[in-house]
Length: 162
Image 1: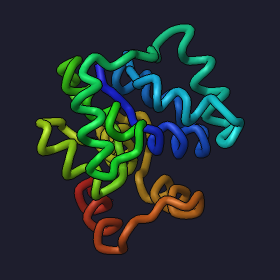
Image 2: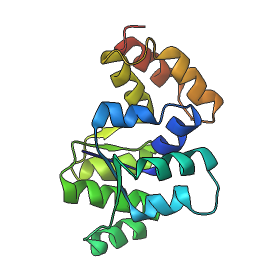
Image 3: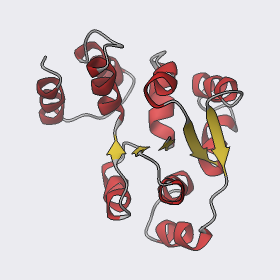
């Protein structure tokens, strides 16, 4: 099982690749705060529909137990979804935590999480022969507003043998 923060859900849904999460990881858990970010208010319509459909089978919305740790992370500047995703990943002993914000990733790795960013999801999908190439996915991510430095773009492509 993996835990996801908001951004991987949003970008994968926007690119029509939300189902990759189920295929790659089986079960995905999100904290209630992330569910609230994607499902409430209609801000991200594609992801709201994708999350709603997936909660009937492979995506579960979970409540965190360690609210004191979540509050500590919020006081350090993290958003509720970010802090709760880190706490939930720790509580569940998840195999990975899906998130993209570099500043937040430092907190997640300090908590012992194995972080996979959205481009890493595509690299893993290519390794498992679910997609033919990573480059078009990275290009689509950038077009959708995903911030990816040129050096990281090249590193990801090199690690994917492209």
